[in-house]
Amino acid sequence: MSPLLPVIDIIIPVYRGLDETRRCLESVLAFPQRTTCEIVVIDDCSPEPELSTFLRQQAETGAFTLLENPVNTGFVNAVNRGMVLHPDRDVVLLNSDTEVHGDWLDRLYQHAGGDPMIGTVTPFSNNATICSYPRFMQDNPLPAGWSLAALDALFAEINAGQAVDMPTAVGFCMYITRRCLDQVGYFDAALFARGYGEENDFSMRALEIGFRHLHAADVFVYHRGGISFGMESATLCAQAQQILEQRQPRYFPLVGDYCARDPARLLRRRIDNARLARSSKPRLLFVMHKGGGGTEKHVRELAALLEPDYEVFILRAFDATTAVLEWARHGEEFSVWFPMPYAYSDLLSFLRQLSVARIHFHHVLDLQQQLLQLPNDLAIPYDFTLHDYYPICPQYNLARADGRYCGEPDTAGCTACLAERPAPWGLDILSWRTCFEHLLVGAERVIVPSQDLLTRMQRYVPEAHYHYLPHPEPMLDSVTIPPSCDGVGELKVLVLGRLTPAKGLHLLERCADDAKTRELPLFFRVIGHADRETRQEPDLPLSFSGPYQDERLLLLIARERPDVIFFPAQWPETYSYTLSVAIRTGLPIVAPRLGAFIERLVNHPQSWLLDWDTPAGIWNDLFMGLRRISESTPC
Image 1: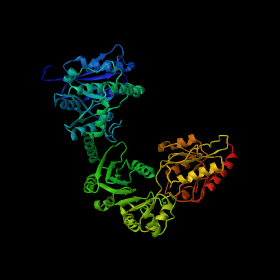
Image 2: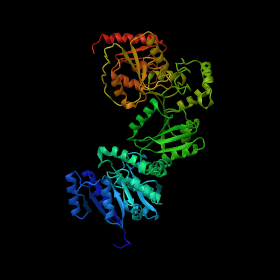
Image 3: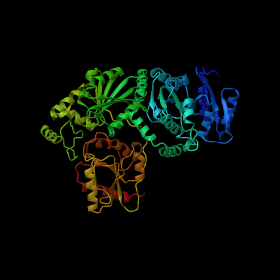
Image 4: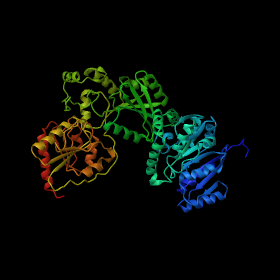
């Protein structure tokens, strides 16, 4: 070949995965490149005869050069065999579980020739750690509605010619210049024979003598991942990390610094913006607090329900001076930060550019007051879902400083409360309620999840357009969880969730203390944690499991095998997702005669309600009565 026509070897080591290998080779062969290339496939003594047969049949057509190892030499040796085949050529190492599109090689080659000290070039992928899209450092599926062809074409258009330096190449698709190989040498098969870590070690050796590693932002390659190594992947990765820490002590600090700076973030956001610009779905904006609890759960579930038909964005406070806008679609990373109040006009411009058609307020706790003006400034309709009592109570839960229900006093009582615990934005109670009255009355719908909440709010803001609508939840069947029946006669009382004084933490402590004092056979177990230091076993018959994931709650309840579920809340709950889970168990439920508990438990066959301010001893008397019932019922 003439030296004016460089040839690049595309090296594809193969060990397992017939379907993945076939798709990989088909994608490489489907797109002729301007850059002259030779496909070199190394069959590393595959344990799958049908795979080896397929490779031989295809090689006979002249589609690619096939090298067959008589024994399995390991991934790194297979790669090295391919790299030494033609000692004058640049190479691209391509995993057999990847798929490419378009003029992918031409684009990589353009980056590689931009500087004689460029050693490697790595494209974007769905599964490539620091080169992953849409979520950085994650294994992603392709974004919904986007094929590899469409996504790669978008990267080629939007990020044409763009690249950033990074500390290491990523081996799924790794262009290596021959000048780098000549000076750095090949992969270290003695240390990394099976694979994982070899490209990082090579990259560090290249950095030490001045070579650069580029992240090509205009190429996207699909990578399934984990085909050759299967269940061994995690073990091999952990072993490689240990070797890298010993051999290349600078590697992890450099990668950590890169991840903290994330220089490719802007390039990912450009793709996000382009994808959004091409979406014809209407845009909705949810406004909520920093996150957590039932409000976060509701917002996420509602966004998931709307995902097929809408693009949903969430605007929330990050801190006292910064608002962050997130794309709520599953699997997306998109977020934009706006320092307030200086960037408010930028936020308005951005929302107009997104063509947001409607706002849905879910909570404004921690938000900058300026953001309440969004509906007027954007001139779009809005809704407001009430998750608690924030529009009428700056403490949001109608609770005093000790966490107990305040009884909703008159203006003088609320003013005294705010003197002790001032409202955000420095407002008095009358100004606070007037401010939110305007917001609620201007909403097309004020959604309330319980009749109790509706009745209370109508006393304060009667002109609002209320809609009673319980929170949508997945349609799940009830389950039967047998009681403990441990043979010792102790009643196990289960409490769910993160406990605060308003959620009944102090009442629960008093119940446990009373049980200990009176030597009652009661034990209180919390699936969750407390928001402050709490007495527990061995001092009291009380223990906490710690934080949990919502989707595991039913399983955790089943493992505890409780006799009764207790809700010690001291404020009028407006809904309670943990109550939904408790109802599904079919277990007896004890709760206060306050808030949404009354209406939501009216049809539950085993529920007992007491006044919210009932002393601890009487709650325990009720539990003891339930214990006597359980003792007379066969397990």
